[in-house]
Length: 396
Image (cartoon, rainbow, N blue to C red; front, top):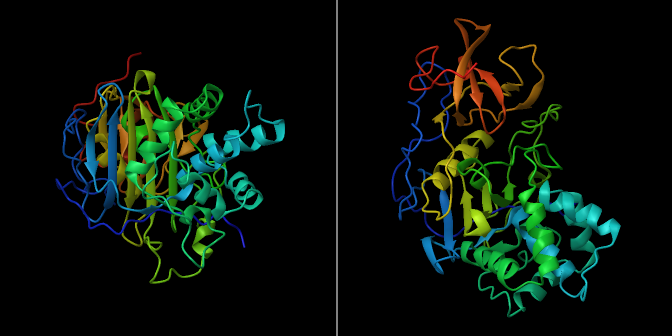
């Protein structure tokens, strides 16, 4: 049995500080109104979409204080966020120069950048499985309070490790402030090079922090649940579900929720890694990846993150499955990637291009998506008009 069954779940009650409409609409002419850039401003009250359970912590390293804390001690299953601990455990006693053998570098780099699961399987099975988590929770330098090994009956499932938002902040604070410089630089340099497409299952992993803020940022994302495959890259994978869907049914005694789909965004934002951000979320069973992607994006954009730079543009919902992002405003242009079905996107500008027909609609306008560096036809954007309101034309 593979050991890449990881996820995220919290026992804490749903916290709805401010109600937001859910993600993208199912139809181009009946979708919700666009969200103007800047509408969701930084505030001290995280806005958690209906139906979402979240643990949130934002720590301002410059001021030495938290700016956001919502159920930050609640335990979630870690999903791929645990790969930070797998990396730290491997590097812990490698001094004095912390040289990484080439074979391990070839595993660790894609594990940190693209969330490669085969690499995590290797370190989990080679270095003791749950003993890794016990070693890390025993490290006083880390100061972990809520982290725990996978529950009884799931010893091989590294993603069922329990974590909390405040422990995630503690992990990043150790890496940035106390770890030996070679360890800090190796981990953070790789997180800064996070790839849009995950290495294992071709998911678009630039949600949450990576979508809410302009660089500089460094991220380690996590997701777990029955999400449709094939949403990222020029060669999308065939339809399917993540491998963790094959896990045994969760047991009632499990300390964390192992059933609801999870999506986590963690990392640092701003110059000199000023703010540490941890957003851990659970979504109702049956939630699509695009809906979860949109909800964690809206939540992350609502946070007070000192040092963050927010991208210019206007957020719109989309409709349709596997909408292609093209290098130019034409269907013959190179396909750069495909959008998660129904995801919300940031539009920077729009331009007239090839006429696209999706009966009964016809549209010659194309939207430029700065976070993807490409275009989609406006026909797939949830707006009542062909030309998007309050969006400028792209410069010639």
